[in-house]
Amino acid sequence: MSRRTLNLDDRLYQYVLDTSLREHSALAELRAATSEHPDANMQISPEQGQLLALLVKLIGARRTIEVGVFTGYSALAVALALPPDGHVLACDVSDEYTRIGRPFWLRAGVADKIDLVLEPAVHTLDARLAAGEAGRYDFAFIDADKSNYDAYYERCLRLVRAGGLIAIDNTLWSGRVAEPVVDATKDADTAALQALNVKLRDDSRVDLSLLPIGDGLTLARKR
Ligand code: CA
Image (cartoon, rainbow, N blue to C red):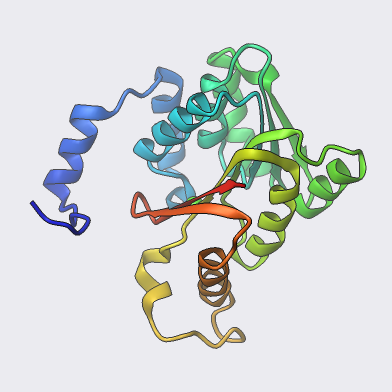
């Protein structure tokens, strides 16, 4: 009965999962395989993956971008939601991380939909822009090094068509973004997220919603 977003305690969060999560077996297996990794908290939550898949279907996406693949859970969730001729341009720098996910992409039958490019994502995105692909993508998911988020956002905004969607993860950053403005020399990640959140609020190029799901997921629809 509240006008505010609920705080989810453990029991209510489990209820959300129990009553709404529809996780493909390959996604569940990849999540289990990643849970033993020391950086497992870099993986999106399963309900976030389901939301990304729903958004991809809602906007009829065919060509998508992912900046920051980690072990490939979100790329797999998106690829499963794409039509047979759909593609994910998956940008990451880590062979070690992405190697964990690739067998699950194969098992789910979507490996040929995911074009993994292992180099700094700014290079990859700039190359696509130089190749004349501005406006040729429908959806982008940004979940990588926070200090480069603005660089990724600006490039994705050019690559996505009008009416296309950019989803940006970790925009609530465990709550640290709400603390006093951070000294960028001491905490570059928090400072970068604070600056981007304010920039997005005032960015007339997009329609906007910051969802308190997972660690904060901002949706920006290109006007
Ligand atoms: Ca993340």
